[in-house]
Image (tube, rainbow, N blue to C red; front, side, top):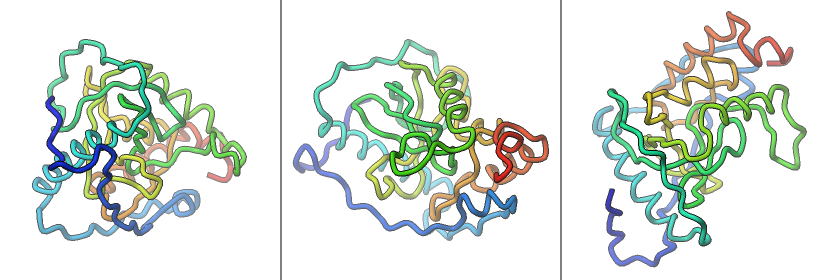
Length: 222
């Protein structure tokens, strides 16, 4: 896929970040109140919003990859895309950071939208219950070199500069964000206006909790 033109901006230009508003987080999920989140109105409509998000995600990845330190290019394994994949940006996984963050081609950090896995890498916080298991599960889904498709929502980045995305495995169209919640390796974290799949994630978390999947069985405080 050719890289989009950035209109003569410097190689390390980053688009301005929008402020985010926390709608529901770990505390709500921990208390077990899987409440549906109120969706924010969009002048684009759902289809238009997704199209705008995909275009924005392409621009973010292209712009920020120019800022990465030189690294060996990791090429995705040759994979025929599975039917049903939404439009997005295809890249390769370089590594898994933890249960909800990965690094893709160009050393770009990708934060999976709508999910919150237990902490494992923040030196200021203890390793969370089921955190190592969540990281290991994500590594099993996305080993190094796995071709993934990134699909954006309304906002391009979080406050840490990580690209926000829904992640799909190209080979079989597995929706990775949803799979983490469905199998009990992550809770729901809904931050407006990135709410395209919020209701689906809440429903999956409710089912996982009812079935005592993953952290819902292992972590009494979940």
